[in-house]
Image (cartoon, rainbow, N blue to C red; front, side, top):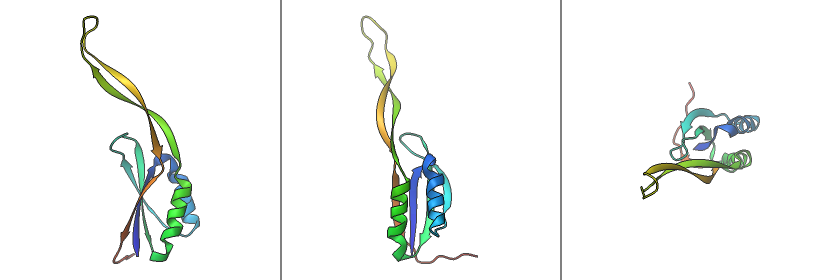
Amino acid sequence: MKLILAVLCKEDKYDTIEALNKNGFFVTELATTGGFLKHKNTTLLIGIENDQTDEVLQILKEQASHRKTVKYTSTHLESGNICPAANCAVPVTVEMGGCTVFVLSMETLAKF
């Protein structure tokens, strides 16, 4: 048995969960936040049999889309003769989305 932890963008969660459910997979959804972009994510917990791993990974790959966004990071400018020290927001284009997947071996799955 396997436990899949799939971290994906909040925007992709509805289509991903629907596709997994249509294919007979049940998920537990956790609301999470990314450390760098501070963007809201969803982490899915999916318990499966060993032979279902490739099917679940394919669904996750198809449903979790990549997108580019602009993140503003602050930088400090040293003071000079003309202007005092200032903090400026610098735009940085970053790619977000997709899916980070952890596949773990699981000893037992029990439902009560």
